[in-house]
Amino acid sequence: MEVRDRESAELIRSQVSQRRLPRGALRAALLRVPPAARDAWLDLVFEVDGLPDDGPELPRGCVPYLPCAVEVLLRAVQAAQIDADDVFVDVGSGTGRAAAAVHLLTGAEAIGLEVQPALVESARALAARLNVERVTTILGDAAELTGSMRAGSVFFFYCPFSGERLARVFAELEAIARQRPIRVCAVDLPLPQVPWLELAAPPSGDLAVYRSVTPASPGTARSRR
Image (tube, rainbow, N blue to C red; front, side, top):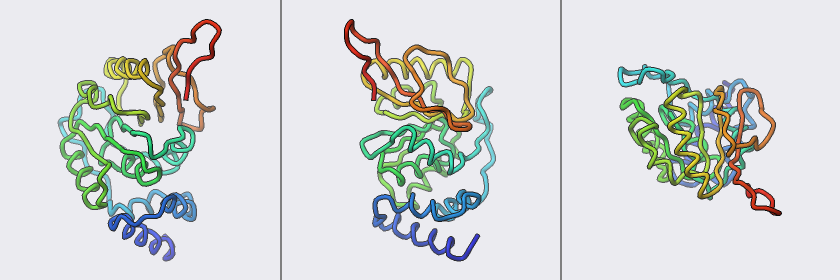
């Protein structure tokens, strides 16, 4: 990594921990870093070194933790139009990297749901290290934590699981979508065919972003965000 990129990472880390990060500064700094170095740069900001091992608590059918690429997060923020009024829910949040990044990029409140205690510990340590208040991580199986999803407006799935567990989570999302508009970001994950979701934008590589739709009354257009 170039010396100037290391220096910019250190500056951003200092601004974040002192709660003096100007609006848009993290995105602007990321875009000045060569794309191939952006993940390493963000890890330097977050003082993250290496990947933790998965523990025995990982349920059968769940995917081992792998951090989401910065490029995907940037595309998700743009395609889902995430802003400070949103509540971003990362389903299968691992060490909290994506939740913290989206919060700092947009100002949105971020909630991580993670089943592995050691990863939850790492995520909470990251939030404490960054001195951020609107980033939290909840320990438990997302299929059993549906109540914790009720506040969400944007739901992020980086291929955490599929099958029956995904169907249970999507049943909860449908209930939320009947009350208010939501968006769903899916990375490397084919979603169930459901009538209450439509693409918000053409798929971008491994990322697809959806928005909820509600049935239209006769003579009216569908409600959407």
